[in-house]
Image (cartoon, rainbow, N blue to C red; front, side, top):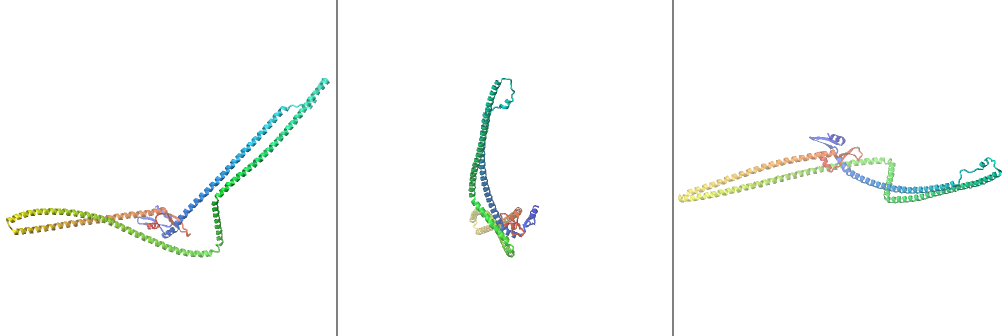
Length: 460
């Protein structure tokens, strides 16, 4: 069930079943392998180069932006410090001027408050006073006194008015002077601010020129790239102008290139098939060599065991021979003792009987007994050796059969494991990539460490 979605996503794969095994097999192996040979390594190298170049450009851009931000921050900081200092100085001057003006006005007002009479005597009030019934002299004296007092008061009032006018004139002159001073101070402050502004601008220009001098190499490279881009744009424009005229030639060249490509494609397919066949033959030859090496190893192991068995049997036979020799020696000693005894008896009998015919019969019987016993011993030894050889042959056949069964089981297990690995690799690592030839068909590229022929052979 897990192979059907994979088969639906891979248009160039075929879902096949062989016995109890299922898997996805590529339809166009030769074309896929040729495409991977031509473009697989190139794609990887191009992707790597692009990643390194983009990372380098990003680092350069980030460094340039950091330096620009640092320059702007330093300029803004210097300007803010300079403007704050100028504003504080201007505020201090304004406070000082206002304080001085306030002190002068207060002083003048205090001086006038002591000399100014809020109730002056007017002549009309004196003229409108009613006449009394006093004597003319008293009235004249009183009127003279009032006239003198009034004249004195009028004089003082005139003096006071003149003094007030003078004070007002002095205040106006003082205020005009203060206004001129304020205007001059503002003009001087403005001139000083302009001078400091020009100085700050000069400092910023020097810093910016130093920054431009430091980035001259990068700017030169950027200008060179821009020039190349302009040249490329001009070339593209010329190409667009001459495409109409070169259409027929291009079509003819395309037909020739298509024919050449077909020939190259056929030649590449033949080369690829030849390489695949050679690799297949090499794999088969290597497999035969491995099987021969395994057979030689198994034969060597069997021969080693057979030789150990033969050595063991030889040792057992030698041990049996030694025991038989010991028994034979014991029998011979017994026979010798018995014969000695028989000899003594025969001698005694010969001495007693003196019968030569009996002696001959005894010797013949001894010889017959010896030959018969030797024949029986040789037959028993041959029978024991034949039984040992038959047991050794049966054991060798059994070991060969067991080794063959074990090797067949191990090879079957390794084959099933390779097939499962191949199916798993095709499930996880094949992906769809566009065809660079522009034919509309799509091929599949896999990034694995195993060679492509191993994957193809495993798919088979």
